[in-house]
Image 1: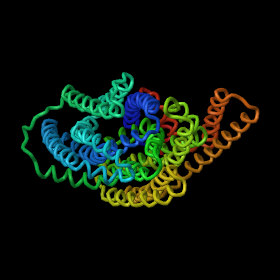
Image 2: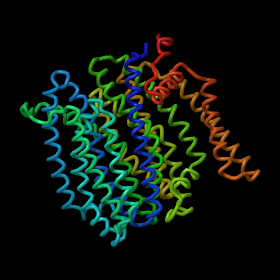
Image 3: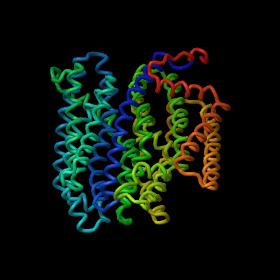
Image 4: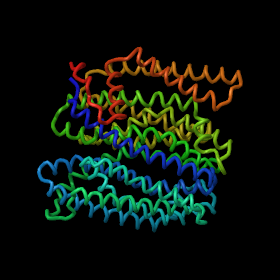
Amino acid sequence: MRESPSLGSQIGRASAVIMVWTLLDKFLAIGKEMMTAHRFGVSASLDVFNLVYSFPGTIVLLFSATLAPAFVPLYLEWRNRSSREADSHATWFIYFTMLLFTVLALICFVFSPEIIQLIGYGFQPREKQLAVDMERLLILLIFIDGTGILFRGILHARKFFSHLYIAPLFVNITLIFLLFFDMGLGIYTLVWGFLIGTLMKTVYMSIALYREGFQYGTPEPFDRQKMKAFWLLAIPMLGNALIANSNVMIDQVMATQLPAGAVSTLRYAFRINDLPVQVAITAIAIAIFPFISEEAAAGNHENLKRIFKYALIFLGFLTIPITCLVVLFSEDIVIILLKRGAFDMEAAKLTAQTLVCYSLGLFFYAYTFVNGSFFAALQNTKALFYVGIASIFLNTFFNFVFMHLIGVRGIALSTSFTMFIISIYFIFLLRRHLKISGLSEILSSFYRMIFAAAGMLGTGFLSLRLFQIVTTERWIYLPITFTLVCMSYLGIIWMFRTEDLNACWEAFARMLHPLLIYRKMDRTKN
């Protein structure tokens, strides 16, 4: 028996809302990357900025991926008893996080030279000094963005997805504005853009919560037991955060040993590879998290099993063809998005090759977001912590091996390989926690998707080769080939579809049309 139509409809609508606002944000992000590439190319100064920004950015991401998922199920539990009580406890938590990030920002400010010496060990002395100067400004992001973490958690728990995803727009809008109106700031344009935009994002979320009825105030006394329960759940979540975020910083740190431009090449490739994950996959993971938490709290393990199965198949349904498209059109994607100004053809080719290496692990990278939602909802997060630590050592080892073989591309390939190993482990671990007897239904669908992907690649390579033989213009044959490969994938999936793949079609339709009623659901019950 499938999850109820109302649950499916709610998740579909929530995913659609998140996708709409995320898509807008990513369009702005693409515009920002295009303007950044035009202005700075793959220069040494951009390498410095990317590495320097990655430090406070990674810290905030680690805390965000740790504190917010732990806070959501607890806040929902408190709110089931009393909305006033829940808001009071949440306000105490907001005060605590503000104090925590103030202290952390001050410590990082004082030790900025040592931090740069550690993460920028491959830079020259001039670049290290520039890095220290920028780091002392960007450290403010730890306080500004860290303060907003619980604002995001409350918006998430109360399912105010529009506000949650309107807020990040302020960052890219601010950066585009400053890049367009050149104020002679040089690379500091990016520094001030992130600081001002992030401040506006945090202020917006706090105001949105107030307007939606959140009661700032502490009528209830501070409860140490609730704080203890929060940290017992939050600390192990650090593992999933390390998997999804810290390895990106490790990649950039190790890339400082390579020629100038390597850090920027990795950053550009990662941002492009991350686009479909942020638009679609993160939307799904965030949308289902409150629902998974509710099902787990109610003890509905059968619903959890079904959600896990469909989430896994749907991830493959989306990410496998995207990987094929990147393999076929990576160079064209990079040229269209970035090749202008200081970003030349040589930079485009290297970035495209790096993008392909990242895309090979797209499914496994995407899975980490969904995986974390399940473990957090089940309040069973110790495995995330241990495997997260292990992933750092794995990624560092494979980086060292592959970067000496194929340079910057090896670092991206190392990340994909690391994600593959830990994702397979997590899938089998979660299968045991959910007491899923077998994976035969899931594997049956994946065999069909892999077969469809092989047909897609074969069609693509054959089409590209034929058009090159007859010397057709790229602007003519690229859209034709793109259409052919997409039709090939969808056609094969349709011919060999299973009941679960049919569910993927329906889920995709719900995401595109949030008001569509789940009409076919009853036909496939039992």
